[in-house]
Image 1 (cartoon, helix red, strand yellow):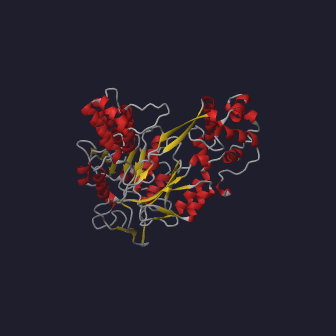
Image 2: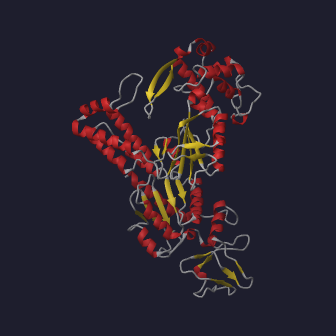
Image 3: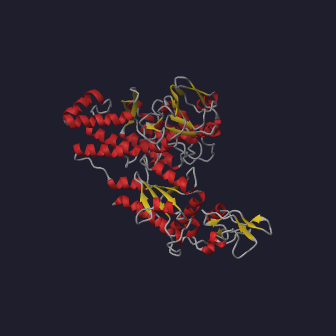
Length: 569
């Protein structure tokens, strides 16, 4: 095995020197530790059963008995304390799941999926003992082997042990590093969800240094990719290797990712069919048919689950993937509620899901920097602490580009509250994108437009852009090179500065603030400070803008809070 794929360097000092210290660490007696590790036979440690895979095959589950399970949970806790999962790993990681995983690959032109064969069973007793003997765990040889024995069945990792997930992730740290490095070199995204590996790319052609697509959609993996996986001690399941293009359905851990996070159409059809059967024939007849013809699940106790509980779970899954404000989800919820009086949804949870992360679009990068700097300052002082704003940039800048984006976004339901913030510097935009009488307008589908409110130190009738949310003394402060922003009012209709005859500017009817082509005729150079540079100074707190008053932004954030609060009513 390639040594570079081992996650940790060897460390000389042992944190756990012997089995007695290991038992103390696990909170059990040495006798109990020895009993489960060395005396109890594997067949007595685990109960075996199978469950159906999605493809119809059987998956072997080896569930540890109660005493061993408790020990394995303690081992898992100890390992997780010293393990930080990579950003590309999504299985068995807190606050990461199939939706977060799928989000990485949404809208990509190409999607490669490959499967690691017999993933858990490939991880051997020797490999587990090896990682425990190395940093950061630093177990001596004896407790490392004892721990490995407690976590394995037949010298390999069982699927069903609470310790197996974190152990598998730790063993794959080197593999993840190498594959992510290969993906990055080819401008691809890499993720792993347990034994499922996904690599996506948005180029016109998928990188042949990773894989080549066959006519049937299969993929011929490159020697480089195969070597990385083999050197890491794993084997590729070639029957499950697929390279999909955007025109085909792309699935990532059961989530459709062609345009947005979605569930397969088959799932929606199956839910609707079950609801229809219940509506037309009653629960008893519908459930009897469902158990005989449709339900293929396999439970350890041999009992089939109730159809209504399965429907609840499936509909909840639809909401989790598509968003709890999604129209399809809400329609399915209403149909089930009409049939099942015990089924309720948490409307506050739906509201929190929509507003817990608010997506903000502005007219350009400079506006975004100003809002980010202002929000950071407010939150440091304890204001707007609950606002979680995610700033996104539109491909087209300016009010017209943002207006087009806003109109496009509201055509489909947005998973999160989305607000497009406009400057108050164009009458037509103000009239069209503000509400009556307020500053914001609801475009439906969780999309709002907002015109920046006029701060108290400005005349309410004035047109203003984002720079006017600062006091004039701050706006027109020169930087260390003597450059500053200029007001349109400083120049006459011919572009001549009213107070300094040496300054000339090409007058723009659209701009209220001039940051370009303010020429000093004597020096023959532009002396204006670019807006983007001004925004950088503000964002970074650089002198002479290290002590800026952001009070003019309070109205905008107050309006955002008001929009979010409307979902709780």
